[in-house]
Length: 265
Image (tube, rainbow, N blue to C red; front, side):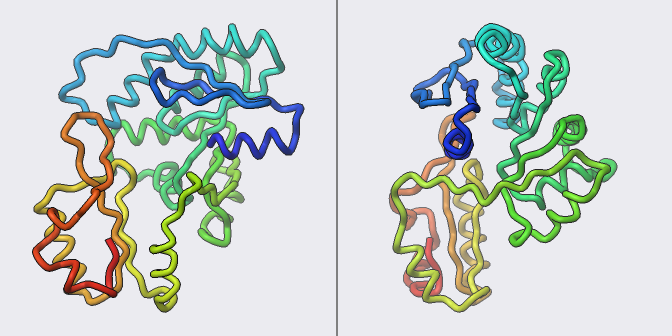
């Protein structure tokens, strides 16, 4: 999102953008037209029995008074306030935007297919908290989604469907750290089009050894080429998974040798 902000500010230097961030070592340095304000520390309740996502949502909700105070003190007092751009899990702040008399937009980093599942939920389908977020999404003025019509044709239908807030496709937004894995690119370029199965469960998606073995056996039996983003589960609660330095120890014996050239982990 920071890269998108840089593009916006570089295109129009009359626009300034303020990010509100959680306290921590990941706080970024401000840039011309872009500033970062770290929210204060809050005391969290006992959350041992709460999932990682719900823990994050609770943290956001507890920060609402601080968010309102920071906006009133540091944003409204210094510039024309155009609106709030919210994390999907901070959709509760749509009401905060209404209190402040400004527009709210949801920045949805996933694609249109996932967004469609949220804004068109079926009765009794999914978790109650997800359905609650979906209802909040409908109250925003619009949704900024990381996709494009050529990649997901259903985007055009969502854009034209006036039963839902305005959709703004701005993708694909790709985070480039300055490093690229040329090995993956070259491997993919050597494969026929539409011939590779891609397995990725997201930055927080990780499975145990038993499930890794089941997935590996299934991949091997299909005979398809595959690219597998394998993440190591964290040993600490509410900490995101990390990359394996060497996945050999968690995969079935001989798996990498048997799938050499056919698969890449």
